[in-house]
Image 1 (cartoon, one colour):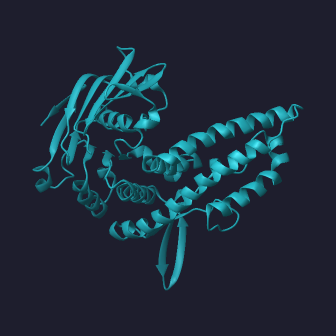
Image 2 (cartoon, rainbow, N blue to C red):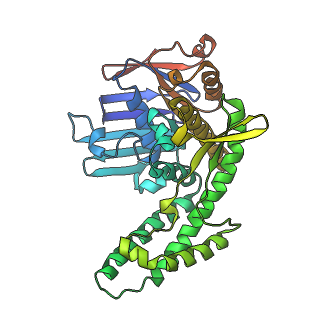
Image 3 (spheres, rainbow, N blue to C red):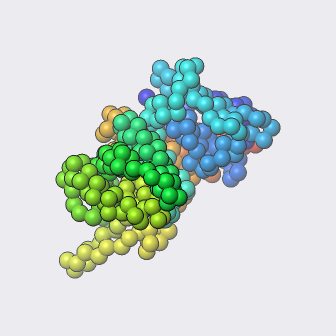
Length: 366
């Protein structure tokens, strides 16, 4: 499925706007601060119920209104997100649905300047990267991730009560957190194994050294979810007193992290560099591009459907070789990209794509 149309009402700087997309490549051009990114954000929000720019719902509502509505058509489904300062409501074909229902209904992958935080920022961004992909491709993962967070909150609450002197038994919660946490870890490990296989293919096509994800969440190597569960049970008992003292569960997938490694070979020696710590801004940009291309391929392989690719003003950030690779990827799925000018796209491609111009809170097809 692809996104056929999107209707915006009082979203960001748009009062009333309808955009009819092409099923292939869509280019949105305009000067800075005119609303190009707002279009990409609206599409992403329609697909995931979340913004990739802010956690504040009030930021999404036009200053002249108290409510924002995003509505879109994709195949047989009409999806609507209603945003107020009190939160969001999701509808599919005019029936109210849980926000989790929408995840994966319209698969999308976004690459924006904010995406570089996956590489350079805190572990939370890297966990979100894993969770986003696995939630789109596996509803069971999404369900268990939500369940894990609830169990974890309850276990942490009991840690606080025990420290205050209450006589509570953690064993019931330990069994639950270990069971669900082991599932999450096993799914993440399987994704990273597949992701590294895809990274070999991707890094051979883009201008970069070999890229790999280094992910070692557990103290020993495991071969199954059952192996993880055994380690989990041991660690929870071992860390119990420390957890009570810290009022936090210190072992589990909620504390995950991974590294992005560039490998280069010089005179038969392999040199490794962790890009998040030692990489230049350009290297971090290339690593992020590689991860996003892996995300597209993984979703395609899992769902049998290529996600809509959202590129927010990133073409100008790459050299000619990598820009050409990105451009070559665009026709393989529906792509919606923003830029300040058409100059970075070849003329033969411009003749085949749909172009929109944004100015003064209005969008028109060129």
